[in-house]
Image 1 (tube, helix red, strand yellow):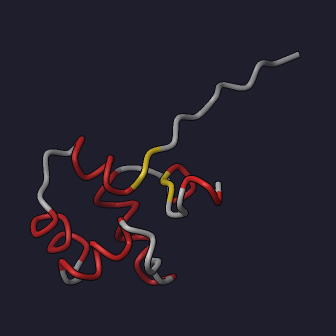
Image 2 (cartoon, rainbow, N blue to C red; image 1 turned 180 degrees about the vertical axis):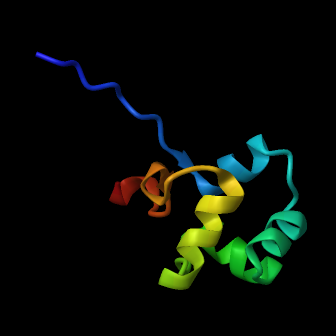
Length: 74
């Protein structure tokens, strides 16, 4: 039987911090405002379908590997 590797998921903020980017820098790469990125990081709003490929390209991660819900909802 093949063992499944446990995939570590990170919040969007953790991804940004690990990349060494400020909210201003990351929001510019995503093509959104700093306020929009802040709302995503604070679970107030969520990326749209059109944002997903950009997030994946910029971060190098699959969208499913990023936590967008508050920890009590995961």
